[in-house]
Image (cartoon, rainbow, N blue to C red; front, side, top):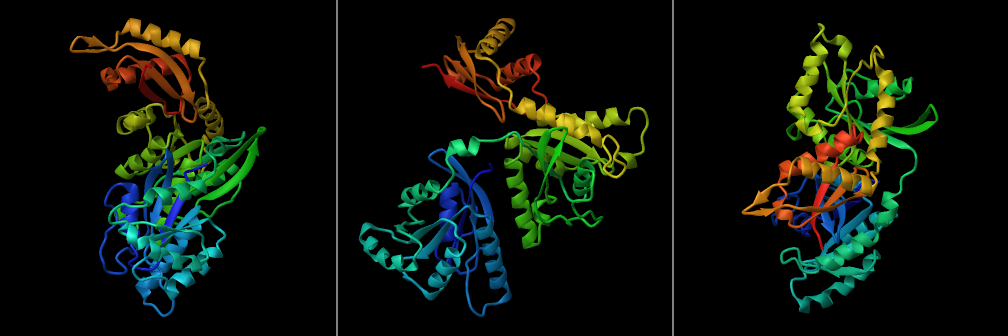
Amino acid sequence: MGLPVVAIVGRPNVGKSTIFNRLVGERIAIVEDTPGVTRDRLYSKSEWLNRYFHIIDTGGIEFGDVDAILTQMRYQAELAIDEADVIIMMTDSRTGVTDADLELARMLNRTGKPIVLGVNKVDNFEMRNEIYDFYQLGVGEPFPISGAHGLGLGDLLDEVIRHFPAQDEEADRDDVIRVSIIGRPNVGKSSLTNAILGEERVIVSEIAGTTRDAIDTPFERDGQEYVLVDTAGMRKKGKVYESTEKYSVMRALKAIEESDVVLVVINGEEGIIEQDKKIAGYAHEAGRAVIIVVNKWDAVEKDDKTMQRFTELIREEFKYLSYAPILFVSAKSKQRVHTILPKVNQVAEAHTMRVPTATLNDLVTDATIMTPPPSDRGKRLKINYTTQVAVKPPTFVLFVNDPELMHFSYERYIENKIREAFVFEGTPIRILTRKKT
């Protein structure tokens, strides 16, 4: 599963952006005492008690006769509510319960989603008696907080994460391989989806931005079940104008997190641009298995070295994806499309591979003999024990005498030795260094 999504909603000027900034640990949202400053949804990642989640800040919701901007802000907030797994309803202790609060509470209750009620601007203990009126909203226990001073947020977050799926539930996955197709607009993601499926399942158009949402398509091939997800194209932030498109990008990012394998699609005609590298980075950072797919290869003028030169260019521009296989295909002519699913199966298997602890320790011991660990001021790094602690992606822990002595280049050396010994094609590997206790 992807990370849970938490939306902060409320009427204007109750302190949503202040709370958002507190929870993400930096000043992302603009905070002013003027209603309506936050017009679009802001997204970030947050963590509480080792539970990570996406958090969305929304513009204030107003009811009745409002102008076009406020209508658009309400629409943005409704999209965030639709996306959220848990909703934080923010109110203001100083103004008390308003008609707008009551209307919003009725609207949120109709969603059937968990609601956590935050009463903001309770800046001292004496003000806590003022929160009891908020029970009349009918959305549960009110939590007194102060965004300005950071008070009460722990209790609020305890209640928020109580509504998340259990962590072992999040880890449970069946034999279905989830494959997301990502890339910037008009690189041929929808055409590639149809080519893999062998039928016209999704709309294909020369107009960039036709796909607005992540479209899941379950299917089976040679006894293996898949879910293929065609995502909306991701533009540079400065070029994302429409609210629906911002919503689409969030759905694409969530699709990446929920995937086993991600196909990063590049337009072979246009070559590599900076946005391609940024999009691929999302999959790498999420720890997903990655295949780079160069589409529209039939339209490229070629000689006997064209594919080799393009491969070298990809390796140079995507250095962090050195583990990712590269496929050159044409969704239009179906050229080499048949190679995609077998490669998906290979990298999905590598993504879930476990290495026996004894074998792993023998490998690391041999590696340290061949190239001794670095030393600093006469103190040498010693790797006492190595074990694999997770899959998706494969994650290894090195227990050492002093983690400060582990240089990133030696960590890379150990990773390369693991990759040489085992077939981890297509999947990132994470290496953690811990002090032996």
